[in-house]
Length: 352
Figure 1: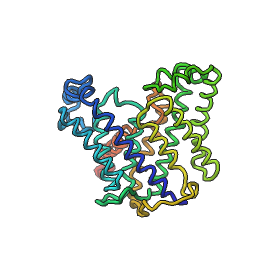
Figure 2: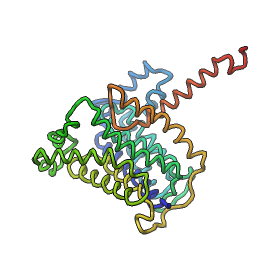
Figure 3: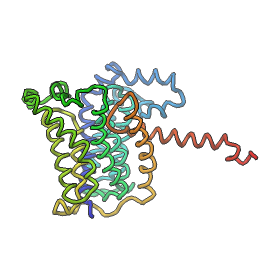
């Protein structure tokens, strides 16, 4: 099956999401993180520098260790907006995504509570995969992109599956019983981020309607993700349900780029044959196999470990693994292997 349209959709979804993320952060950045901000990054890093010392980049990967002035914070937002725009236009996509990823990672690493939400982690995880969407070279494909390597495309589908399925599981396993007894929507509409006018009327619906809505949500999050891997009518139906849920969420609350990413991931499931038309904006060249293996080796083992830990642990922080944490776990694992090899007499050849 061909996935030209899927490759284009997911590439442009990531570009638009990055742009919105930096654009929405720009007018707030000084009030939140400036030198006189609520949670000043400059103040935070000065405190952490005394504690972390040589391991500061390992624990807090951020450009702001070099400079955290108000000008630097605003400039980073502008750089992210420019890089995401160039990526959307088809200019050296992987390189531009790398710039966006490092800029947003710099903010999230120091962002504390204001950038610790599910959508920030989702953007970083998809953003890391975006580093492998296209060959690393200087080029310009007007509004175009490259065909995703099958292994990278598989990771994109896995990300969608984790996002939806684990979101449902976390609700069921949470200590609060409101989701399990289907009453969460009795206060969800007026406690969610920036409720829309429609949320007011949804909140006035009878309790039975709210419980049925919760049941529909659990069906979409816990059942339909399994069908995205099965080509055919079942896959198409699964995408319809996923898209419908995101549209309903979008109409009742403001989750910034979260719905855009989820919609893009959902629509990217469908092959070209389902869409019924072709586009000429996708180059058939993909990244080499060895490069496509990098995100597989780095993300999959650590991601599964963190997802399991998140589900069985007492503190559940989100419905899916965090890219940064997954990468740090991978790095820690490699460091431990290297340390073991240096100190193991059998590995060094000095033992019996």
